[in-house]
Length: 405
Image 1 (tube, rainbow, N blue to C red):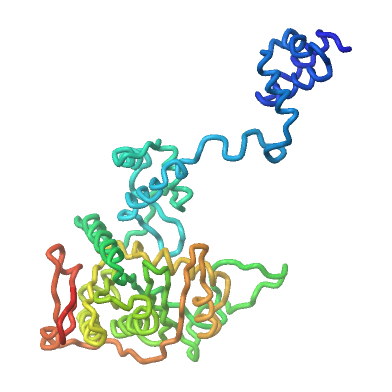
Image 2: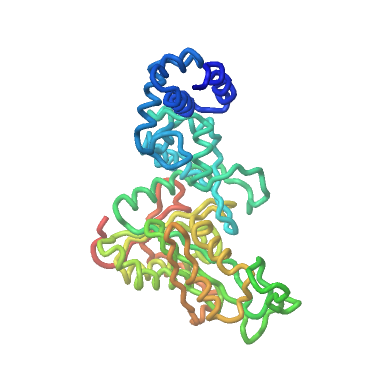
């Protein structure tokens, strides 16, 4: 039989590297080797309490209750913040949603609020959370800490943040009432042909796809102007690949095609439609043809069409930019856009882990530039401006029948 000194030396050698359970099992094993009177003898040699040794003996007799290598029981350990507080993530996203910013060429999102300030606001809402946990949750939600970058298109408008809040409140109101909300914009025009497209893709070593040295327009192929419609609630995109001018008529025709093919099916009880758009371009807040074409669409569908424009200098923060266009850019990176069919296929093949679906089709109609809208035509538009920045926020009502709010 081994001596108490031997037991003491072995335990002293292992004590510093064993966790609590391993120490219990170690002294219990020594006790079983010792035989009768082992509990008292091992307790005397190691200084471990008798009841702890007896617990170790019971654990030795039991079959393994957890996978090999695991210390805690299944479900043991500190619970994650989102498990202890199911509404924490949703409330955090609400706090940053109205100030969320994005860039059309990346999928990252970022917020201008600090994690300490967000933690304070969450605690005021009844949550118990520290700022390191807020930072961890933001990373999980695909936010990141960003430095200043020169991406502004113009001077900051003094009512910029107020307009962001106004748009966010209106979007939430429409979605709550199950009325459609779409974000629209024209993606960057692209040249068609065997021309270099930024990015890389996997190919056999030493066999890059050959493209032209100079990126000049190929007359027989030309260029395309993809105009997109993104359904915020359904996470569905619609892109018309135009081959002519990017005009307001082309923009509204894309919205019309989305409504006829998808919108009215997804929203059979819709009475209103909210459009969020940039302040310039074919869907600009000052473009007369944009309002006239929307009036025609309202007359055709019977929908009251509300429009909210983003302030000057914030066109890159429209939802469609970082929830649709950015993923299209990722999907076709490194692939030459050799034909209209390739362009449409690459756009339609764009998906995300969150279930984004995209429909794409060619719009080969002609949309002449420079169309003028007379004062008489403008006077016939049923335009109602909001009390807050009526130049950015307005509604266009159908010109026939009763308007259902």
